[in-house]
Amino acid sequence: MIYVQNIQKYFKKTVKQPGLAGSVKSLFNPKTEIVKAVDDITFHVDKGEILGFIGPNGAGKSTVIKMLTGILTPTGGSCVINGQDPRKNRKRYVKEIGVVFGQRTQLWWDLPLNETYTVLKEIYEIDDARYKKQMAFLDDVLELQPFIKTPVRTLSLGQRMRADIAASLLHNPKVLFLDEPTIGLDVVVKDNIRKAVTYINQQEGTTVILTTHDLDDISTLCKRIVMIDHGKKVYDGSLNNLKQKYGQMRELNFEAVDKSSLNALNYQEAFSGNSPDESDLTVKIEGTTVTVNFNTDKIPVEKILNYTLGTIHVKDVNLKDADIEEIIRRLYKGEVEEGSR
Image (cartoon, rainbow, N blue to C red; front, side):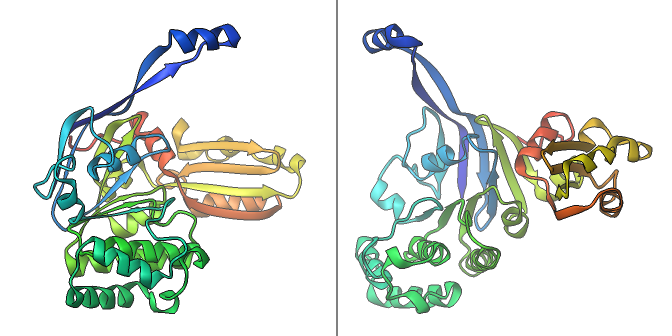
């Protein structure tokens, strides 16, 4: 369905020299350098697959998505989606894809939502019977009816995101690109959107590429991920394999009642008998706030909580999975073997 081969995107960046003299010199004789936003990435996505496309901020995820959707032209390499080159015959190509950017909307700001969909119906040249059937399906999955006649500008973030996903699926595309679709949403809305994407994928066979920083999105929706960093692919394989390779990392955050009590904490000494490596247990203290990253394969959650709460008094405590940056850090330290390229 999707074949990406050695794709590259380079940008030319002007390097400004310091001071007024440097500004004048840069104006008349600018120096430039090449920034490799995407550097020789190859992967493929099967029909009906949901692929998690992840990496830290600035990794090049959105640049890849923009090339796959035809917004940007690759510097080198190729991409073919459902037998088509995004750079050629754009009008026909966009009728086969749907795109949702979490930070932007394709909806008309001052129009009621139902009128926005009517405009999109004409743009995509959808006949009346097909439009009615698809709207009934999307309303059932995304629960649009309570705000279908509401101006887009008055929608909540969660309502707008559901409306945007519906807009991207109105023409029943073969491929759906979701770029941070749950960013800024509360837990309930996130869960509803994940269920909707899963249902659409199963019922319509829609191929989905999902970029996100939320590991819950990935673990709920994706069996396979491609991870990139600094424009390069660093992992391509199953999520389960990645978790097993880098260890079950968790992050403990808590706030102490007073800063002086933190002197009593010594995690390295307390858990030296568990033989953790340097990357298995790290502690960061900022004022009264403490962040502990630990590998549950070496140090059980129960023990880390018992030690913390038994040693000092805390105001608040939170336990969560390690973020994507932590996964990549461990990957580079050799904790994770690279997947197939």
